[in-house]
Image (cartoon, rainbow, N blue to C red; front, top):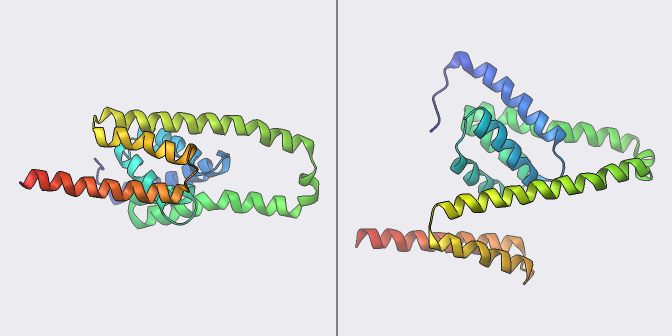
Length: 194
């Protein structure tokens, strides 16, 4: 449960939000899914500003919203912890490192394009990114299975089969999963009222 933050503590929180989102964006390679474990570490585990279920909900919203998952998740986490100012500061902090890095790279594109050291470093980082994504998927599935709801325990492998084996577009899988969950919610609500 989120605590109310006094105005005196807002400024340090806003500064922390800027710093942590800048740090996460600057040192996280591999896309939005890699940001989720970092947000978990700093917002859930270290600062206790969010709970695990809030993070999972925000990750689902960030993934299904237009734009970069990392930026969407940073904005949502900032909003949840410090309101509109937190969302704006988190959004700026999450796009600033990429803007600065791409500006430097584009200025020296010819030097980076054929550099074998840069290519080797980027290839090596792929293994780390893959490990972080596997860890994230494991944690998310474990938390969903802990709830003990049969519907979700069946939906996860079905979504995996649809993606991995049937090569169905991820957007369609997300939309179908959302619709199925909505339908399941209405069915459960009707069972309770009957």
